[in-house]
Image (cartoon, rainbow, N blue to C red; front, side):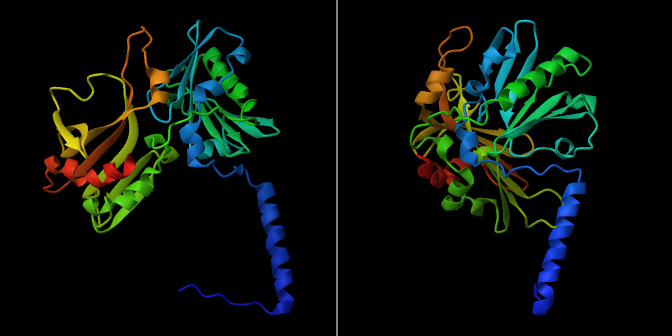
Length: 326
């Protein structure tokens, strides 16, 4: 039990001033940068990242490509072969917030900062983090960027610099329709559905970025991996055949078509079709070759089990969750 001891009245003010003075001294000496609190998860779920990139400011012929991930990163490519990927992030690594980090360059603005990291270690490549006073956090990188190529790293820094100039104004958003999966707080819906009971009597619930992922892990094991772990995430499907594969078992969940697969190592995988979405149709209705696509909202589940659970029971066990979503 935590107890509190009250100081005599005459000494309280002295103690308070001493504490404030010490805190200010430590802050001035600390090499750590204090970041604004991250933006609300719904900001990340609705942000139109590609529309945030200002092509005219890049002084190059540029093509923007939306990733199929949710929330959607944006790939920026030039005709000469330079590229960068812009994505939203919840966390910024310590190496980008310590002012004494090797290879760190800071670019200040009235409304935020861009933190540019050289390749250290080289395997991570060059990367930049754009952090707004409004809590917006963006990462600019590219896994295939050559750390020995100055042009590649410079392009990543240039993209980050242009983003820094855009994050203080109104942010471009994707207007997901009411009831869309991308407007949901998945962990809140999981909690309401009682799905945690499927994982175990003692669980740890971990929300993912933009509240569009949720992981439930059993904590009743003293040592070793959890006996059960369920990952639930919003996703989208592109192929018209996503739910008609002959290699997966076709099932229904709450009246919706789904496919079930049991993988090696006892993982049950379930992909549930939640229907079309006009925003997805506008963004992903055709591929780069002009072929028609069928983008649909979907709920993806991965259930890792270390006991005798029958994967065939999963569609029935998650029915309550799906009924709450749409």
